[in-house]
Length: 232
Image (cartoon, rainbow, N blue to C red):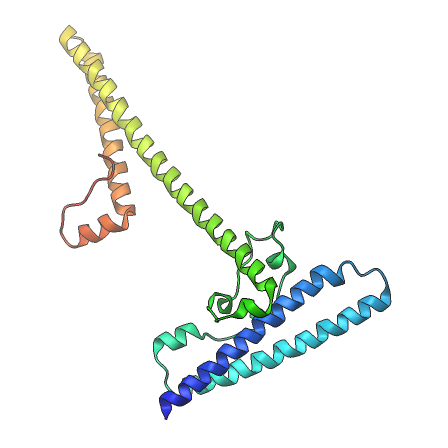
């Protein structure tokens, strides 16, 4: 009976979230397509009546979700269920026209509430706007992912360039050291040896810092295993 009751509650929760999806999508679409183009007072009044009606539906679905979630907690659902159905805050119920506009410039700073990531079957069949919404934010997420991958590659390359520069300078001063040492110039030989040692230490310190920043190498170090060098 507990499992059956839990399944019923989860079905009600999915229905409430589906209603929230549709209501918030309708609200954003009405703002974008009706409220802004409205040119007279009577038209705006009618539109705002629609917005108030949608807000009432949003509050109703949110109340249903919260009650069902309390029931799910009382039924002692597993951690996977609780992770899927998180707590719903009032701030999660706000919507933005930029979220449904493909050419908007505000997607970089937008953060979707958690319930938009839940896969509800056939939610795009009733409202075509949801398809556009999912496409926009999928592209935004992919762009952010590509940006961070590019940033990681650039930072890794820059770190390697610094180490390579120090190693190059150490080799250069070693050649100068050998040249002056063979010529018997003790002052220049000592200076070149000191410069070579300085750049060798800088390169070694950079490699140690890099190994400490690499999570895999940190784990190997704590286990007493040999550290893999990515700069070789």
